[in-house]
Image 1 (cartoon, rainbow, N blue to C red):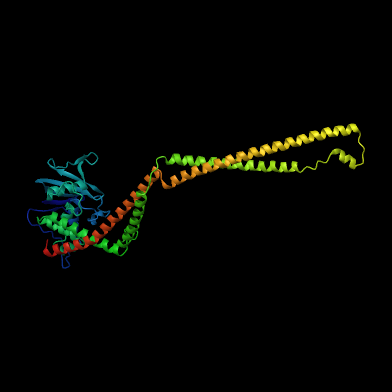
Image 2 (image 1 turned 135 degrees about the vertical axis):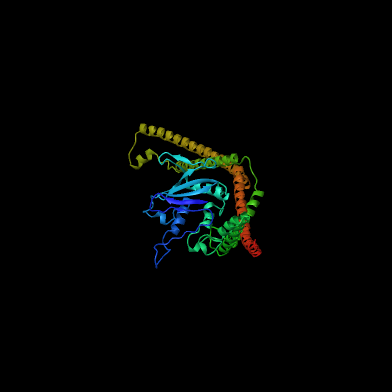
Amino acid sequence: MIAAVRASDPRFRTVHFSPGFNVVLAIESPGERDSRNGVGKTTLLQVIHFCLGSSPRLATTLTQSAVSDWTFTLDLELAGHPVSVSRTPSRPGVVALDGDFSRWPVTPLFNDDTRQWELPTNEWNSLLGLLMLGLPLVRPRIPLYPTWRSLAMYFMRIGHAAYGTPFKAFSGQSAAQTRVSNAFLLGLNWEYALEWNGLKAKADLAKSVAKAADAGVFGDVIPGIGELNAQRVRLADAASVESERLSGFQVLEQYHEIQTEANALTREMQELTNSGIAEANLIQYYEESLADAASGTGLSVDALFHAALVELPESIVRRLDEVRGFHDALTRNRRTFLTDEVTRLKAGSARRQAELERLALRRSELMRLLQTHGALEEYTALQEMHSGTLAKLAEVDRAIEQTTKIGRAGCALSSRFSIKWRAGI
């Protein structure tokens, strides 16, 4: 019960209430033009709301600078004991308390600066919900769960709109909140009203999402059922191809050793080929030198002198014969050397060619082996790729299932909601 409403400024007239039914009348001035408008009745309700934890936005008159430093006090009986609660518009975050609150589950803290016992406004609201209406001190995180402030509006209605419909406490109150609040105040099972609101919200959301998905509103964020089916076909084909590759895959444990040997054979063949080219050039040079030696004219030095009609002494002719003999021996030795070298080089070339053929045959065998088999790492990579494709396929299947469920759930919930609504549940 509220005993009195007062303020720190003497211009505010203290209002006292008595047990039973009380009527507040206010007349601006006596006479023929009496008026009851704008004389403070709504302000009185705002002060009561303000002291009982409302947002300052509700008490628009109290937010004006002229009264922002006023302290408004409400004397009331709470939990069987008289209590005074004070609140100042300039300090809306706390309330000051005076009285017996030793049995409260929440103990106010003493402020050394103000020399008052204080509570944060949010804790004051939770305490009022517990002591006034039996609400839990810690509100569950459930949408539209009843609170002290949502229910207090039914006891202290402000404005003409609050009296237009008995089941609504203020203009713009949602139907969902109206159902929960009235069920709570009438002693009905208000948890069913909460469940009902959640069911209706899911039905509305499912219908909206289904319609939006069918209309392609979500685009790439939530693909339509047609695009999801197309993705599923592509992924299923890819998974089939990968599965066939895995089933026919032959793992070669010595893959890397064989690959290394094949690379070494390639390098060796390149070196042999380069050496063969150099020796082929040398053979060509030696053969050309042999041809030059075989085609010599044999013209002697003394013939040159005879051609010049010069008579040589016998001693000089004898010495020229010796030089000619030396030259012939040198030429024979050179032809012998060149012939031996050409023979040796050709024999080496034949051996090199045979070695090249042997290396080429071995490398060919190794390459065929590598082409028909794979390394364990390649097999593992192929398995991982296949697993990724299967995972994506599973995601698309789940998306198709969820999209289908959304459409069905929207229709089912909407039908279920309509049936319960018609049954008056």
